[in-house]
Image 1: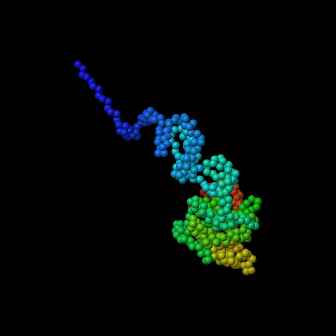
Image 2: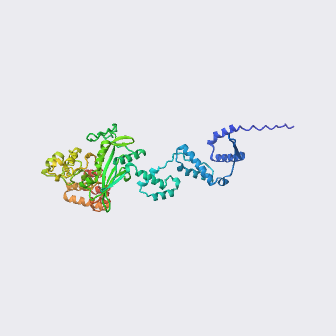
Image 3: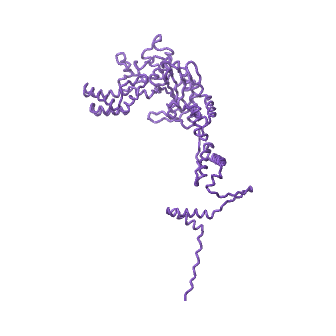
Length: 531
């Protein structure tokens, strides 16, 4: 007799919530094959249970029904005009949320929605602020890059209107507005073309630097070598005789120089720039004060060309300039080549008794200059520092004493101890410590000076024959290794890259002297080349 077998009832299905929680707890531990199988099952399940349509009832009484359509038909349903409206709506929504520019982000939104018509997936909408230059900023960029308005139109057409570039009409309006600003007004006379107001031009440049966040503080190093912070507010006192402000006064720097050049008609350009910015010597970062045809840049010509500007500089030194709504003092520097500085200061030249525009060293030896050399030092005594530098007070005295004539034209010429090699009236009583020679001219003659000690050391240790062998070896190294032609480096212009390469490849000249001079002297020469 067989016993009756009763089948056990099926266990109840697990709760969907418990099953989902269990699955999510193990989801991170699924292998790639299990994960792929799970996603396939999930997609099959959703396709089987999802409704063919979704209905919404709004409070306004409107009922809307959304039906599921295939991806293939999406391109047909969303027309081009509808896509433009959708892109505009999304762009406006982004602008209200991120303060971006509507035109700048419209193109990106349109590309995203157009791609979504043909493919499934997730689209990423840019959320960061998208800025573009204002019409004024674009006009300034056009001017600095020397682009014509026709070129600008071609560029805008190539990049399309959504690029953010203003039209030619808008650019013209911005250019007229910029030209009408006080700092950009120009007037002409028989001397050339000039800015109307240096102060307005400088404050306009400083306002642009502050607005763009490019203004940089220039602090003067103190006795300990550390920058002196600006802790004192500038107080103008034009009724008093001008004196250089202290280093802790809130100030800004201004450099003034003259450049004489031009093919055909030679012109002199008076240029002012401020070191309170990156790349201050760049042409686009400078203020062209005036452009004047000239035959030379001697002292008399400078008085005719630049003399009227000196009152403007003095007014700025007395009253300061406004930077970011705050009045600051002006620290004035004069820069240029040695020829310009000599003419500007009324200096007689490099061959006179005191050839330096900064100090009072005596350049000529002899009994007639013995007393002056004892008092001020001699240029050949390179191991000693200058005993006395030129002063602003002396330049003031020379301006008053010489006025519109040179020393030789005075009824009773000044003595050597009185004029100190200043024969012509200086244009301005600038502090000699704030005279900056152009870096290019600091290298003139340095190469020859550096080559000479090596040959002299060979002569000192081995006589004339050793010096001749050392000189021949160095010359061969310069021709073969450095590949420098024996050309003059100081004439009408700084002739040639050849002389620059001598200093760049100075190690080759030092290597050629190895064996001709003692090791310690060769090491000292190498150090001089590096420095």
